[in-house]
Image (cartoon, rainbow, N blue to C red; front, side, top):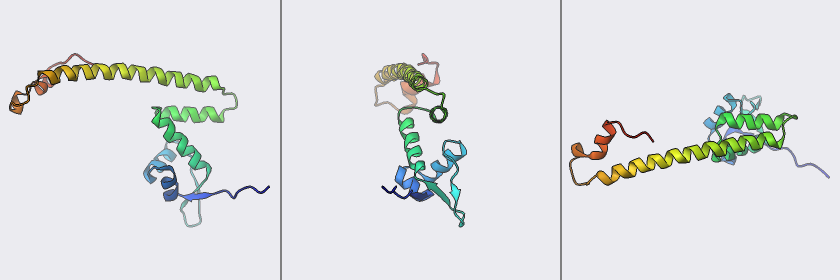
Length: 142
């Protein structure tokens, strides 16, 4: 059985294939999340098909709220033969706790904004706006 030929991508095609921008790909390279590609004789970047898998992993992890630093840690765990699923699960649990903290904070912000919104009669000149006046003063921090 013959292996399928390995596919290679120029940066524009890779960006299109992964739904990202060329600048984002270059940024991920600078940040060490994506290995620098080989260069063709013409000087163009040429990416192997595993770059597609890596970029999709990065995008999916970002969608779940992982920072680029955290994504780097996940990628490092994947390469480390001593790592276990427990290491990855611990990162996921930490992210869940972080998301829960942010939800609490967002709920507080929402409550403050709802209280401010209820104070606004609406039809007055902006200089009389109670929301803007409240923003000028100290609010209960969310």
